[in-house]
Length: 535
Image (cartoon, rainbow, N blue to C red; front, side, top):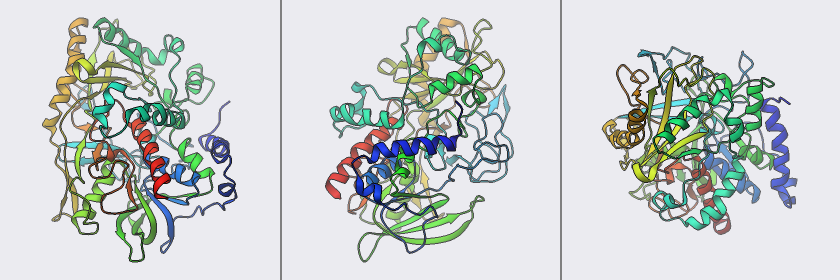
């Protein structure tokens, strides 16, 4: 049966909400919070800045504990179809919905056959922000659901033996016994059917990647994902509207992907205690004279213009604007004297999760398929020996390319720092492109060997002219307000009771795999402690 995205939210949201609220008569009886945007002068018990993984977890668990929550989201709600009847546009035909306040696209893979493929678009509060810093472009989701709207959905739990290097102050036994399972359940994580995978035309690219990895002695692994795999099978059979098989991922997915809109946020809304204000941006959080915090919020339109400035008070504020958004805001507030007691660790230990991309040119007898699912489901694990985990990624051009494409996550040790630039009134990041070299070297431990074994070469036409490595970007920003340094061991900001960080800013630069399951699990751990001790 085919159902619409909004129908899915409405149907599953109410069902999941019933399960979440079982035994909570007070929450069930609570009046539904207003759907209108937050008003100036409002008072809220808990204000959450951002609707990504950390913010969504915080909102759900606080609401289940009987706390009214207001989520502030800079991006759009993404609940209304455009003129084409779709909420999201696809990768091959980006329009105004694709990018955050840009007049030209800035695709991560922005060359093909050596020619630039970016195009002019109308300025709009689109779904993908390509935020430029010195030395790196950081890709982030903009909208209710944050990064879950635009990522490939690869829901990877790090290997137990790697966890101590990711979050050394966190009890790994608790994470693997309680919080990772809780996060995976809440996110709706599943794994591709390996029997179906072996025959599906849309995963020919992954099977070629498997063959090449195994012939060079590298472990091939299936990677869990948050896509509805039954829906994927129906797409392949032609019985439902295509989504992953219609080039939808980078700028949103209209059907099969279980983003936060369908999981944590649907359950949070169903409590009746959660309200969301899209197209609102927090610019200041300051201690209020009567207790709690005064929060200044700008409301914007779809052209990015400020249409109203609002001041509200909140008993508690949770920073969940993503690694970059949270770090930039706190660095600004510390440097400008609004939150001067924040400690000197704020803004430090930011990393790119070791991201680097590359492509390989295969022989004519190894076609990767003109139909490619945009949802990756497999990877090559050389973390222990070479410091790299490579996602076998799609290249959904609609034509046969004879190319294998990869996003590698590496053990890159380099870390950057955010700092306030008083002259420009902005926050800078001191990342240097040359700091990607360790990532390239680690990725080469996989692909040099595969190329030598297969007699193949690197593609040089995907990131420029005669340029092999996509070393200019990250999909996985992490750190900047690191756990147990800038905060205590549960995300409480030093010097300010009632202020918390609960997103990827807490994780110092690397998770060894795609990070959103770790961000979610850490948020589950932290909010449980905060509710039990602070409320």
